Image 1 (spheres, rainbow, N blue to C red):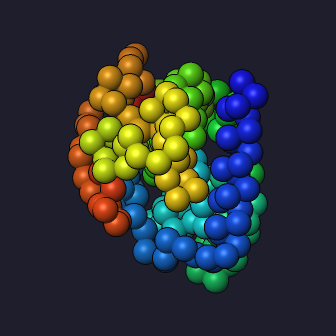
Image 2: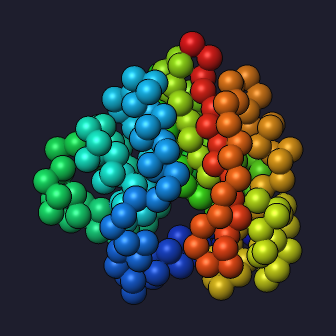
Length: 220
């Protein structure tokens, strides 16, 4: 437990330093998974979107521009400061609320209070398998019946899997960033008691990173 907490705090500080040194590091354009998620959320009739691990906000801002009300959370206050500044510039501040939150703790929302949840590479951060299961349980708790959850994770077919510093539990640290690489069995176990509609493989960025985009829904 102490080792997990130490790794978590080290990663928090690393992200803080990274966002400070590289403002808007992922650019202004939304990620491909966010484009897909916006379409999926709209098709499901969603109006309110919770984004976990929003960072400096490129995807949260896309959801806001698409007309959704967005609660953007991250454990980096620096990233969220940049998100709020960008929201003001884009004149969508009224549609975006930010909250500093560590996903190792319960989500700061009532039961069945949001229509959709999005998390791009948040679940594959330095979280233990137990913490990931607890987080997905929380996502299900805050989603309304029929609500949609779209998330992406790097998987064990990625070139960095098994490389760098091992922290156990399929977590490897490379270049200062610790990643929990997902085997397919973990994806399937996280979808128990959900309706799993898609596990889509894709590639992104350098190497390139190899990921899955997962879409699952709370049964109505």
